[in-house]
Length: 268
Image (cartoon, one colour):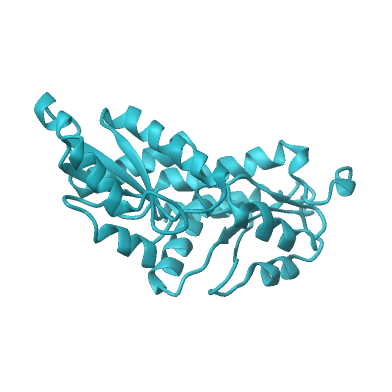
């Protein structure tokens, strides 16, 4: 009921005193990768609803790079010439962020592309909460802390910027947890998750948790979870901090003219 009320209030705010509709803000287009796992689409749709609840009156759309409908070009075509901000549901820089999404967006006027979701403290907040849900203790004693470690399991990319972003997320999570956090990957980069687990054990830290740095359930998240010697956190999903992070990237893109995909339209 509260969500319905807030959306109604948001819609009323777009109507001026003389009854004419005010121009709304640019649409927010969530850009998912796409997955054959049906849980992934359900998760992204749940995240989209949380974003809508946090920002009533904002048009929130969804487009996928591949595998799921609607595909991003179809979502952009439906928007026509309306302004939009594309927020990638990706957790680091890489080929999709640098090439695929800007190329798809370039065909649409007045479109901006936001930064990926990570690294960012709100992403770390979600990772931390998911670990707590999986059984991580908030106040371990010194002996437990010295025997513990975390593997930050990410998709992986050949792009060095992607690895740098994942390492930054790992450092932020290590600061939050007070134990070593080793970044590892499901594909395209090293170390693998099993190798990272073994490396922590070799350092005298056999109590290893896997922090699932994936937006939604899927093949990579499942594959990484199978390597866990102890606990594995759930994917990031529709956590409230993720919804706030999406809106932060949206606002950030609007305040940065350089994110326009067509700079010639900057004054439009």
